Length: 221
Image 1 (spheres, rainbow, N blue to C red):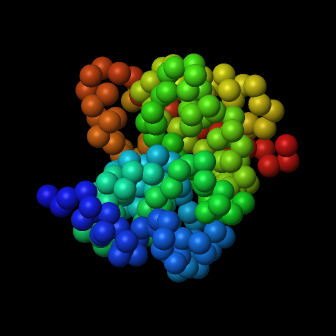
Image 2: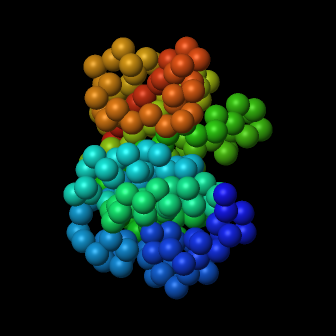
Image 3: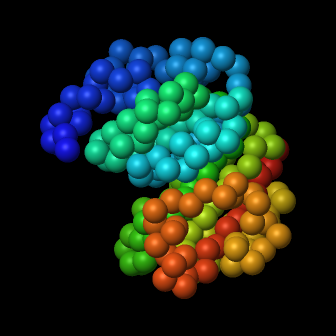
């Protein structure tokens, strides 16, 4: 097993990983297709991707699209990056950054779809602003997401799911909101493409129902 320091050293040399200090990091905004992927295919962003299980799974199923996994934890990014290299996936990149910094690295309308899978629920009231479906995050997602692009969210956490629905209900720019509180008994099941993260499998086997929603932003509002 490689040490933590060796993993960080690996990331500095990998073409499928962007992080502070790399030359491409400061040039990438607005240029993901031309500089990173070298094609004009649609881009899907996975927020708080962890070890990149969902990013990798989607990239395997849809080779004609590009995928970016975002996380701040270098050790997690290393795992996803290593798997993408092992599978020779050229349509995968990992971005090491805080999500609050995302607009300095992705231009308006640059991504075509966003996935948020099993984020930390941040249940304490004092941590509300850190929830990844808080209004300040939603505003960022709206700006980087192309018009008519889907935002998709999966969680096992009832509190976070209810909070998200309440937050969306207070906005006037949400279109086509569809959701289920039990994905595996829903007509929406196929929309997750059969991909289960380690956390999802754990929660599912423990008897937790998996919640899922999707919506689009109204770009005119």
